[in-house]
Length: 251
Image 1 (tube, rainbow, N blue to C red):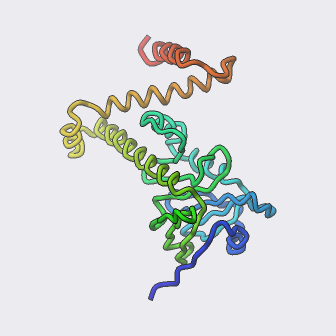
Image 2: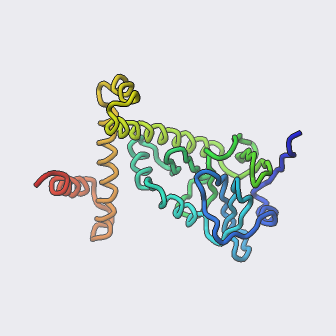
Image 3: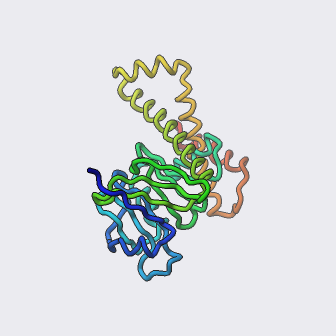
């Protein structure tokens, strides 16, 4: 006989905090973190976020969710800079998931410049939406060996859009990764299949465009630290092309 599933309403933040244990060393983990909740509005001393983890259970942290997310992302080869380039490439604006490999980290509001709630699509067992209540229901089969269903406030239409965008990024990253594997392992069966499917080298063309978008982000930021509060696209292009001429070729 299975364990009884516990229900939690994340909007009742004091009740959730009462179930947790303070963990000064808690970090987000790609293979076990389920959900992180921003609880700064609760005004409870030394508790700024709550982390639901498969192995550690419900953990309380003194760090804001924004800090925890940045710490997690900065340890990976791909950061938000590359994800932003991907988003620009696919023409998707107004949402900022984090996608790398099997990790799909979804913000539950659009205000990611400040701390907010996030969940890992790849670690929760499943999820559903309650459009009337304006919530996502996360089915978590294991939170330190206990099954939970956790209701978190969100706009279902927004959340679905972010998840769709994240899936698009995942597919694009997969294409790019496959191309890199093919370039370095040309004798592999995957390479033969890839060459058959991509006879027009469309993925290479995507990679070159992504590289340009990615590098231009840094050019724009560099100009903004100088005298250009809002550098024009023409100026960014000029500086980018000059840098490519000087450093991208044999001189």
